[in-house]
Image 1: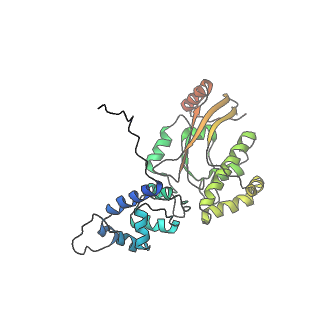
Image 2: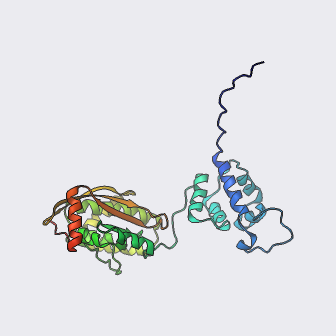
Image 3: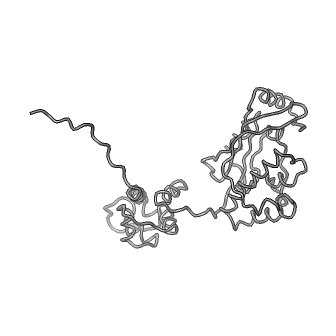
Length: 291
């Protein structure tokens, strides 16, 4: 009797989103100790970590409903319930975001404090990218890091009325930030600021900056009601200078995973002429005189 060739074994069926969620919750429940959530150990525990009833109690949800979540049933929790589970299980920010992604529920907008100073490691990176410009901005576009090359090529951002150097204030209130290229840059900056403002709509620091700009800048007053929003930043820029001719460079905005509220922007030469000009500027420690 010959053995029938059944062909290759089909790959296992991938787990559903709900099954992934249940497994994620179970693993974190088993990894959370009773004393970490203020529970006194009573008797001998058969299961590692917390019991399901303890999680449901601490999170303020029904035991049956939480059990269904761990069993991968087709139920959709609210954002407030997910937030409570993340708190009980002491999830890190990335783990909390993953919890929301698995359920398909939109993560609530940020309402907590955000960095207003640059972490030492990010400041060192910004400074170390010289002779190429780089800078680090907070959610309100406050300047948290600005290297020497950025000063030579772009200038020095001015301070908003609250005394904090701010790129948006600089772009819309400085007389030397004018012309087609700078107008496009300031408009893009405003569109990115608008997206950050929506995430922190009630933040008084945002409100104060907007009020000051509406009072100080006719162009800001014209653009603000348009509700333009932009998230990404990349592309090429051109600066015409008196001493070095036309400088072309690529720029890219990135999100440091260690500080996801911050944005780092880096510039690199787009041609050999610009590369050589950057090096000459670094050696002379001068600054660009625009044509």
